[in-house]
Length: 429
Image 1 (tube, rainbow, N blue to C red):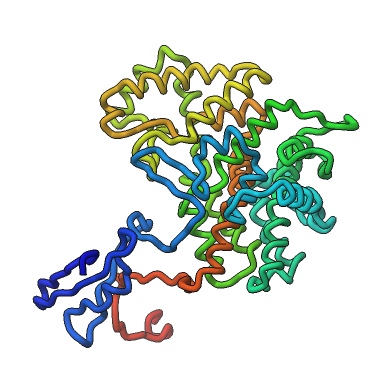
Image 2 (image 1 turned 180 degrees about the horizontal axis):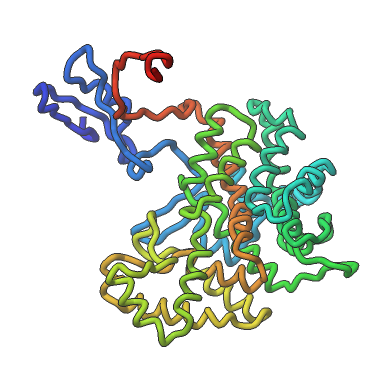
């Protein structure tokens, strides 16, 4: 067997031939390697799944060494420049780019389903005035499963499709209402005459005017941000969607799990950490001292480096251009000059080059969100809206994959064994 791995167990002297497929071996094949017939077979220990493939997927391709990101084979640079978020969402869900008729039908149905049941509005109004928007989004998405109980019939392709349309359509509504709730402002209903990003901006910022006119540069920048965040392989939140979805639960509950994972500061909160870092630096003259602090272990360089990308993050270049477009409208954020100078110095410093620390998507996205007057707690909500088609594409792939089973990782037990129980009346005597 050419494409195989020969393993010699030094405990027993036995050799095993394990097939290699697509650069991987099946973990189950290691189970045949035993020290004795009455003992369990070998398993792998991989905290954080840093070198474990949990699925086969045709949704997103990443080459971290080369700085490549593709959705369904299409480079992210081309999609961000030439496509729209809803077209990218169609691509992720269906696997192909739509015809004119398919696209128009897709946009029509998503636009039609942006409204939510009035009881959802009452549900969201029940949160405290200071409720975190991500907590509100997570709860309200999970609650949608009670409004659409038929969503649990995941074996029906038509039923799956309508739930996917509903969720992509309603996420901006729920996100905008969470934003308005924190400000004590009335919730704004969707405007079906606006496109996806314009409608979201309207629900966020409309006040007493009859019609909200979003600046097309702002709407385009937001659409681009949604595209850049639409999917990113098997990250923490996608893994959560797939893990929960493997129980064959409805897609609203699975996506709510993804939102919960994204809520964590190690996943969705990195752009907020970048802003805090830039504010702490304050001005360009303080950057050399900050760089020295990073090298000495006294400071953390946020927004540089990525667990997957060992080269530049291709999304960072695109988002830097979006920054320029937004600041044409809002005026330049003074932190932008600090960010650009920090990037310039870091990219010329051998310390960072050697460690392959390049700017990632979070380095500039927070500056855009702040320029649009979003509070930091809304940053992750925007991330979640953009990521929804990717989560749903991954969920759809999961439920149609005959190899997938309910997620049930092994553990290595480290506790005590075979203790004798002492009744309370004896222990407490």
